[in-house]
Length: 211
Image (cartoon, rainbow, N blue to C red; front, top):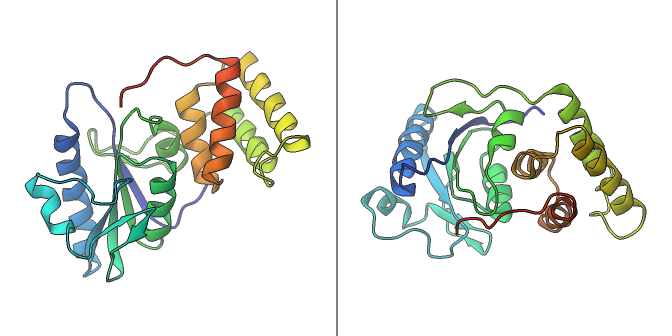
């Protein structure tokens, strides 16, 4: 899909703290925002946002938004989505329209590799643009998104989504994190993503995830 913002991400690594990853993301967002003569903003799932680290201090007054409410006073020049869940990622993509968005990745609730691949985001570890998804996988995702116009309510939409996922599983294309994060770029509701997550888990039981 074509996005209307420049996309980047800091992939999750077990040998790196989330704070260290955030520093990389914030530096990129500050450069992007400065080029537009604006300030970056922070999006998190927590109402109060991250605390206790110097790199988050600039976002404490009027530059932090959550799905529960926004304290963003001015138009953002770039957005940092810090370990976002589905609702925070949706908000971050909305705020970033016409500017730039960088995601600090985390395994909970799912890794964002699919999101990065669909948007061909810049990997801030390598400096390279992420490789697009395989055409067969992208085609299946388009079908999956098509059947979600009613939020995968019980009946036709959910049944067809289950069939698509079954085909993906048989084809070796059903990787939970990739599918869910890639599907998030198609603007589904968070409830719809939760339904797909449940359908995937029925086909491929998932291990416990870090919190």
